[in-house]
Length: 338
Figure 1: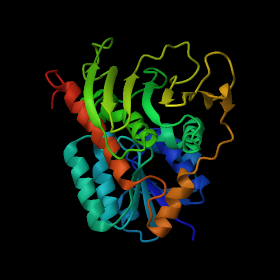
Figure 2 (figure 1 turned 135 degrees about the horizontal axis):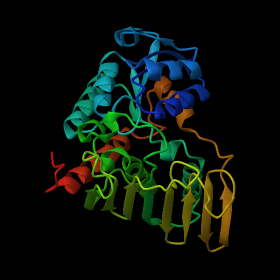
Figure 3 (figure 1 turned 45 degrees about the horizontal axis):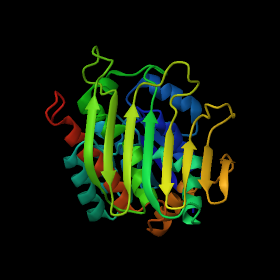
Figure 4 (figure 1 turned 120 degrees about the vertical axis):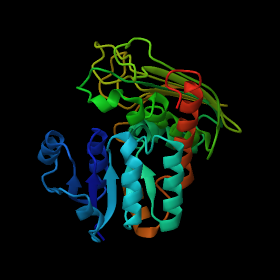
């Protein structure tokens, strides 16, 4: 059975990855809703098979559409996801899936009430072959039991024009809610844990006083029953780096460690998806460009079979719960405190 899907809200460019993820797995992209004509024109040029609709109800009330994807302004994603589930659709949201605890609780309530699938495409895991390969190696016992992770998510602030909502705290949810949600999900995944504790967190605006709503750096220390971790995210990628950010992840195990250079090897190897592993057999570099990305296929199987193979529903929620918790802790006593 071919699954048909649509998109409501295309404000973040991650929507292109979401659409391609589902299309590559065999789904049919049939429609989208976007208020912004400029974004819609660019999007239609890339995906001419999907008709643009003026009213999202055309998508919500179309019983042939099974899945709704959204990469709307972050503060608006929860309402779109809730409406989709209430109309019998499964959801694939961009991160962050929501920007407040109230939105998280309402999504959980509606998901339980409707029995729909609510998923977030944490792209730095599910769309990065090196991250997927690291999971494969750890499952094989390559570095023993994971005991610590260090996740770094630097981004380039000026690699493309940013709309006003990007600099408004209420719209994007704060740097830890937004960018670091990737790292929280990876911490839970590699720790083989469903939940964790935020030990400490901080956010700051160090170099952009003309954008008072922007948080340009944030970090978190967290722990699970068997693993500790550190996360740092920032908007300080220098102009000389030929990509949008030098995303890195180090995973320490009892018998070795893995370091990922997800988007660039600054030592000079071409391409993306570099994995370095050091264990009892010695050090080696693995090119992960051929590793399968199973998320899209697994997600569509979940839609068909009502299962949770792509990502457990609880981990999806708790990655965002940790991000919101860290954001709240970091903002206490600052000008951003909600």
